[in-house]
Length: 94
Image (cartoon, rainbow, N blue to C red; front, side, top):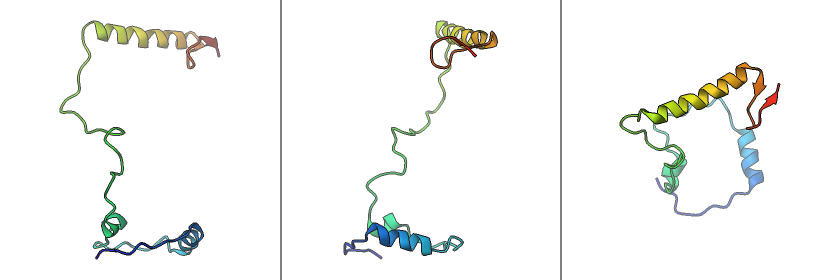
């Protein structure tokens, strides 16, 4: 089933239909999505730049980079433990 005619619907009509719709209706197993019905497959729900495919394995940080990461995280924890706040990049009391 394809829709070849372009239909214009204004926002007020869509709001009226949305408010009149039954929220508890069961969707049948053979329901067709609007994109499949109209052929609107030009974009994905989440683009690859927003949520890329996971890699085959995570890279483990080692060597001097691990020491730098641990030093930065440790210093932030020590400053927070002393009662100072470093949320905005400036050390403040509170």
